[in-house]
Image (cartoon, rainbow, N blue to C red; front, top):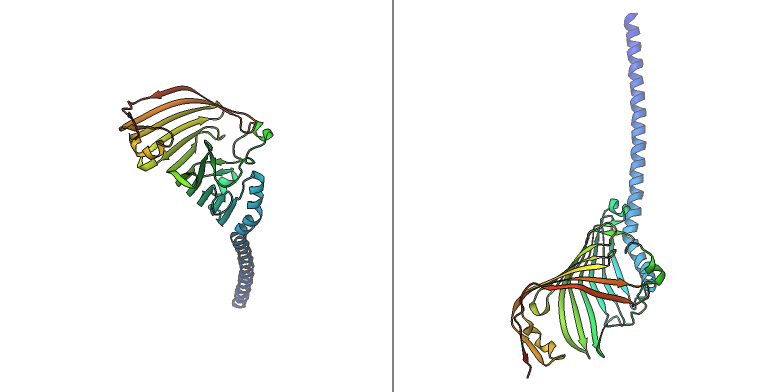
Length: 302
């Protein structure tokens, strides 16, 4: 009798465990199906955005941006957009498209989701940029169109606000070149690199380092502009600079030739004023210093 009762209780507990295990397995299975379905939908959405969002931006936003900025012949191809960066290329400004004023092979932007939430971009880098200028009637202007529309409105310029609606950790231009022409003939070609690093969160103080390489020379310009104080501290450095390398260019403006070689270090404090009127700009140099001798000789070009 007692043995039968124990056997009955044991069988009841055993069947109960089976029912609990079956119920638990059902819940786990349903949750797994829901998670897999959610991940599949999420993957499909992100894949569609990854594939179709660049095409949508190229067809809708790029023409709208060109019209808003007033840039003639502006074109750009967004090649990739992800949660960690953006890649674009084929950037051109100027008409006709075969002879633009500016062309850029690659534009890369690095960021993260958290940084985008804080309106911050870690790095913006341009590579393979070519800038074309024309020297005509004693004036230097960009090739390929009228850029007079490219300006900010007086109302926008008068408002004291940050330059950009987001902050940038570093701005770079690598492997760029400035090409100046006169009557279809190239006057000079200057390779350059530029790096701009903000010193303040409001994007009003920067450290700008510009390196130009004319005729194999290296000239380094280091500027610290302060937009609030409207001042720029500028330093220039060149090692073993030789002006003789530019004799063919200088003879177009003067009959004298500079010869010699020297290390050059110079500095200046510059004050500037930007008016709300388009094209109204004033500049004054409060101090100028040259820290090294310049043993150049002047002779006539025959």
